[in-house]
Image (cartoon, rainbow, N blue to C red; front, side):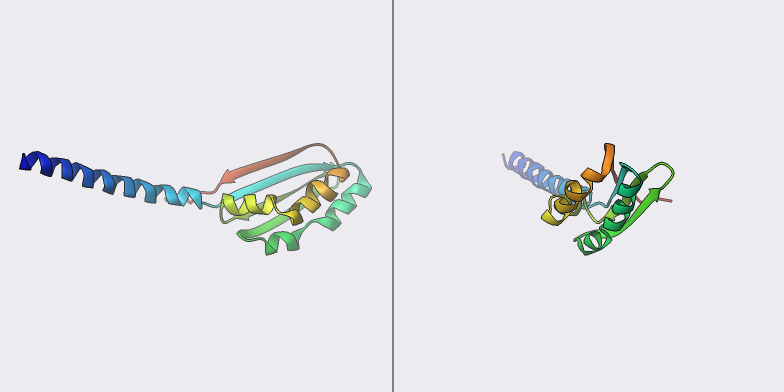
Length: 129
């Protein structure tokens, strides 16, 4: 009976250690960096100028977890967009749900564009080699 008790106790300890190890492995996934790429099309040349004037670089720079942001435009096609790197998906989501961001989009930006907005979010990884 003592050996059965020891075996049960050892299994419980091993299960607890494995559970703790798996929990630690899951933590980096919650805080991994994400890259957000946004593409939109200006409704016309005047709207293109307005979009370039309201590019919210300062808003991004002051946002918790924003590592950097770059805005871009192609005057020949009217395409515009941004690429931003975030410390975590949680930081990005908090920014996107903020009143300051919502005032710009959809607030000011939506009325200056035509067609669909494209937003892609990617997990960033560091190659092993």
